[in-house]
Length: 375
Ligand SMILES: [Zn+2]
Image 1 (cartoon, helix red, strand yellow):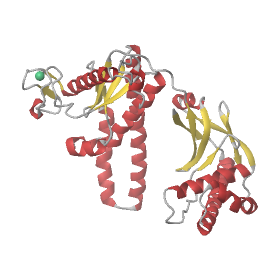
Image 2 (cartoon, helix red, strand yellow; image 1 turned 90 degrees about the vertical axis):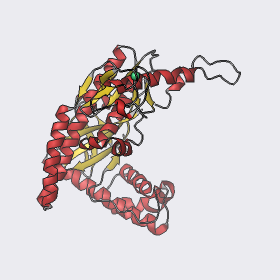
Image 3 (cartoon, rainbow, N blue to C red; image 1 turned 120 degrees about the vertical axis):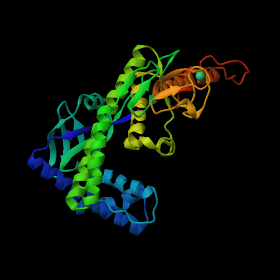
Image 4 (cartoon, helix red, strand yellow; image 1 turned 180 degrees about the vertical axis):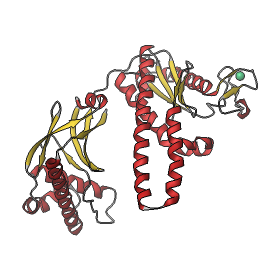
């Protein structure tokens, strides 16, 4: 599985200036190549290489490998369509490979206009762990005056454990997530901060000034980073629990979550829909890393169905937090009931797949692994 580790380069003033010159020169070169590609109507790296490589080396003081990487950047940009000439921003990200960038314990050695530069970097424990598997390209990113590297890491998936029970996980409102053991993973702090930000944001939006716009941008970044951190923590807790108890994880299929949230749960507007999608993504990759099977089940009516008798009715859920079955009288926390349904749906899904007859008309006993192959 490919994941991206993001690390911050702690460049000193001189190094920062050098990186900036390197980035600007590279983008200038990319724009020149884009111009050539457009003029000659040549958009594949191999053919464009023949036309522009030599001249690019003469025009720009860039290493051959940087020029080759830029050729790919230009051709990639034309992949989507060739209707307009592509322009690259002055400070757009550029990619490096192992020939022009290498990672050490605490420093990177990176190619610049003045040759190789050794620059210290900072990374959290999560990113450091990922970096051990660094393989392939890295992007040099300049953002808000700081320097980052986004490093591609290739992680060998450990074999998935065979499980006979599932931990249902419902993504909720009051709590970020609730599982079928009745444990809630609280989002109260996140929600509080989001609410505060939202109020501040509408004020700023009303102000319309340039400083207000700047402030808004900063705010959204801060909020997003905070929510990302909370999602990481929650996803980790859930996966660790499932692994410890030898269970798989069952979550609702989040495809089209944005539309569904808008249509079905307008009160969830406080929470960004991307945060749900992100939690789903984090759960997915952490499961792969831990060898925990994950299944995404049909979410329809998961909050209206009674986990005790199966009766499904809108009125089963008199309030946001309460579930009370109109048929059997079962009552529970609504998120907990939904999580139980997701657990049940995972268990129901499996035997059906396992009993699929193979081509010889018999039964394949080992379909268990392929059952989750798409996750
Ligand atoms: Zn019931």
